[in-house]
Image 1 (cartoon, protein in one colour):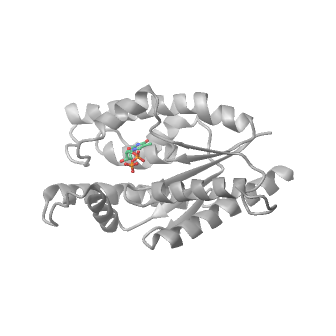
Image 2 (cartoon, rainbow, N blue to C red; image 1 turned 120 degrees about the vertical axis):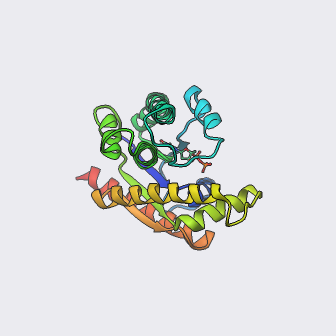
Length: 240
Ligand code: TYD
């Protein structure tokens, strides 16, 4: 039996990782309960993420510690940095597929990934603008011959200004609103968010969009509903 692949996407500060932690807790509590029923019963779940904890993923996390903006788009050293990053992300994705995603799907599991190929299309699509022509299409095409397309993608939609505020208050170093890094960061995330919207519009059957600008419990409720519906839908499709 083939399992189900569900991905969670959104810009930094969209709250998707928090919702996933809450969701994983909920599902494992449901697994421990004696009673029958519940939307997630009877399935085995695997929670995973990109970048992974593998070799390339660790390298990427080191690199991503610095500020990330769309500045410096000239095809000089900055351009090659963006390309280097893209290919590291792709190598990480290849390893993720081979070592985690495909084996779990072959065992019939529900695989839930915190970020996946759409993050590449949206983020590197923004980072590589002006460096390669049509970066979103190009990055998408680089995946097509070998990647596994998710059955459902849950997109956390949030205003980039609110997302940046959330990131800064989480870090606790709160630069002022006049901080230039904050403006650069916000304008980069604005581009990334717009790219996610393009993806969601181009594949309305695969994407479910959640309003992530609300309270944690409200977002969790929507995420659970979207996940339960995605499971019911993909199961009824595979039963046909
Ligand atoms: P992530 O670990 O999800 O960030 P956090 O847990 O801190 O919210 O991702 C790290 C960063 O990597 C994030 O800014 C998004 C970026 N990213 C890409 O640019 N391309 C990709 O393909 C992926 C998977 C992530």
